[in-house]
Structures are given as C-alpha cells and as structure tokens.
Length: 357
Ligand SMILES: [Zn+2]
Ligand SMILES: [Zn+2]
Image 1 (cartoon, rainbow, N blue to C red):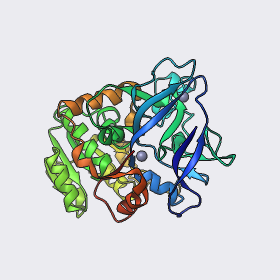
Image 2: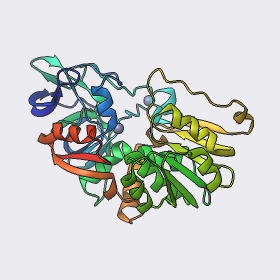
Image 3: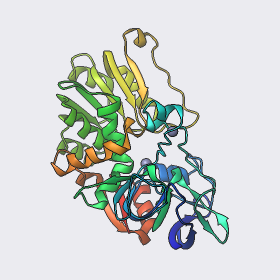
Image 4: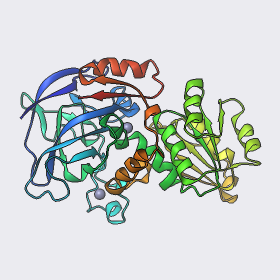
C-alpha cells in the first residue's frame, strides 16, 4: 500500500512528509494504523548522530494505534485491536528471551538498515528501533504490537511505548523499591516523572526529585515528590535529608557526573540505577571501596518491563488515577507539524511533544 511517512534524507535535515510504499504483513507480522507518537530524546540523538541509523530513515518509536491487517500465522492480536508498539521484538528464541528478559532481547536493533517493509522508489528505508512510527501505517512482527484495552487516550497511551515504561519500570522492576524506602530521582523529564510515580506506587516514604529547571521540579512535586532540589551541593544535601544516604537513586539524565553522584548519595547497601543514555565513549569513575559497602550500581533498559503484561498494568494505574499522564505531555501537534515538534524539543520543551495522526 501507499502511506505517508516523515522521512529524513540526511542528518540534520528537516523531516519531509512523503508518500512511501509499505509491503503487506508477512505470516507473523501485523499492520498498524498509527494514532499517536511521542517525540523522544532518542529520536533527536539519532538525528544528531549519537545513535546508529542509516539515511534515508523514518524515526519514531513511542507510538500506539490500531491493528488493520494480520499475517496468516498471527495469534496474539486481531484486526481492530488497539495496540501500543514495543521496541523489543521479544523474539522468544534468544538467550535473553528464554530467560524471560525480553527487554534484553538480542534482536533489538537501533537500525534495520533499509531491510524491511518500507521503501520509496524501490529503495529500502531504515526504521529507527525497528519501528519508524512517524508514519501513518507500519508493519511489524506481532510481538512488537502489544494489545491493550483501556480508556486512556492515544496521546497518553503512546508514551508507554518508551518514556513511561522506562521510568516507571526502572523504579518498580529494576530498582525494586520497597514500601518505606527513600528514593532520589535525578532528571524530571518524561522518564524521571514516570520514575517518581513508580516510586510512589511502590510505596517509597521519601522521594527526592532533582532537576535544574524550576517548572520540572514543580511537576515533580505535584506528582508525589516529597522534596525537590536543584543540582547545587547535591550529594551533601541528599545525605542530610536521608540521614546518611538514600536507599535508592535513579539517574534519568544520561550524564557521567550524575551517574557518579548517584553512587555517592546512596547508603551502604543502597542501589544506584542508571536509566539515562550515556555517550558511546563515556566511562564511570566510582570509589571502588563503595562496593565493599555493598553499594550496587546497575542499569535499566525499558524499565526491565515485560511489554505483554506491563503495558496494560500501567494503563490500569492510569485509569484509577495512580499514574498521571497529563504532566508528561507539553503539547499535542498534528503529524504534519513534526518539524515544529522537534524545534519545541530543541528549544527545551519541559516534557514531551506528542504527534497526533
Ligand atoms: Zn524513547
Ligand atoms: Zn529475543
């Protein structure tokens, strides 16, 4: 079929909405009509060359929509189902999937190199993270289209495809926060604000939110942070507020400095969890002696989520008011305003811009 995609032909060029060819789903694939797609910082990183991608490319990996067509062997979704797109193919065959860690699936790819269902004038088009959801329709393996049943509107539900699962899951699944614990969240964008809500749902007694921007700190306070701080004199402030160190610190910034601070600000036996995306060449320097104080530092990808069950769980929390999507979205724009949406982000939008189709 023919459909409309926002193509980037070269790095740092504007998106151009053009007609493209989308082949029919194979046996185990589905075609989804996209309804909403968030603009994630990783999309911007791909444009800036910090992520592997081949041009021409279609970005977009935080989306939801409705299934329009299914291959003959598809069993988990049906035509008409509402779905959130997942960027783990959850192949079911690799060692990670066999252990149940589908977020670590070895088939996850930042780039598909133009080998896929999308083309233009006979030339394959790369789809970022195996999705390429800045497009009216996409074709993906059935495991990447996770069926949902919810009254949460598409401009909110789409965020579960990346930011919300990443942040919420980091607190609940990766950090495994227990009731009564003290938690620090560094960085209060869409991911950090989701981590704060995850910590609250998990029963943290103290949630300290850290961000240099006052409006983000205000959003963090409204979502359940008990204390909000700027970055000044941070480690000492955290130690003071938590009587010696936090049980858990979650880094949602992506900078080496804040990752190292996380390790410093946790108590003996505490956990530092890194969620922010570092650069390829970044290296951490942490005091090795902290390891003998049984401190741990670990990473979290996709919030250690099982999309097939966790997406619906988060939607249910949204329906009962335990998870609030509203502050995570700065602006909803029509798909054709994708370039303005990226400009919003470059100018430092407080949270997310979502494109509605
Ligand atoms: Zn993302
Ligand atoms: Zn796998």
